[in-house]
Image 1 (cartoon, helix red, strand yellow):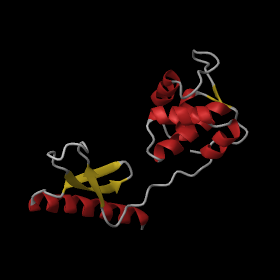
Image 2 (cartoon, rainbow, N blue to C red; image 1 turned 180 degrees about the vertical axis):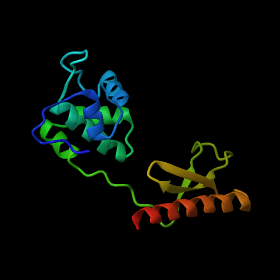
Image 3 (cartoon, rainbow, N blue to C red; image 1 turned 45 degrees about the vertical axis):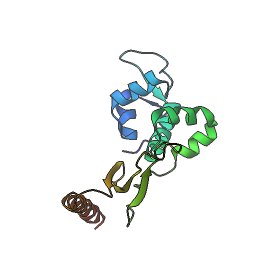
Length: 160
């Protein structure tokens, strides 16, 4: 839902809908300090342009997989103009890689007796990863491949 450019105040539900979050999320962000508290509380509470811009910026930063603590630091660091530019950045889904990345879980460098486990990290969808051990049994790896194929088919179906 897009918001009219002339609107400068929103009720909680309208603001939440405009950004694609729940009213509960807006209240939580206020509690966490990601958003300033509205000027007053009660049935006539309204949220302003700053709330809208900050909520949109939070959504962009979440799409970059930043945790809320890092988002809070970033919001404090940005000037109002930088915040506005960030809020206007389109949030696009991350592309799925063709080949899985290889991860190594590192043991303590000084202890050569500790075995190092190697994993493949597959990004199945934005926000969803699957880690498969290189020592996994063949049927476990086959199951992982089936899950990956199903998600890829689902993504291709959305694009057509």
